[in-house]
Length: 103
Image (cartoon, rainbow, N blue to C red; front, side, top):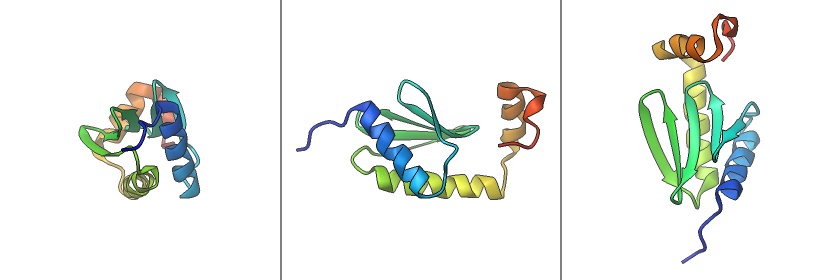
């Protein structure tokens, strides 16, 4: 059995995987949480990457940051192509009206 992965290390590996896939706007918001896009966040906890988009929650093994990055990047691309109805309201709530069309 392998050693548990530290939260910071797991988040760094995931961020590197996402950047490698061309998603460069990822930033850490604290407590092992990465914001990929408004409403699409990934946390590392209890050996799993737990990502959430709106009300939808998923998880991925913490020992596979590359696989998780691929899944998250795929969903990010889907959201960019077809912005969900909840996005506008969430953007206004989190950023105010100045967010405009910026994801």
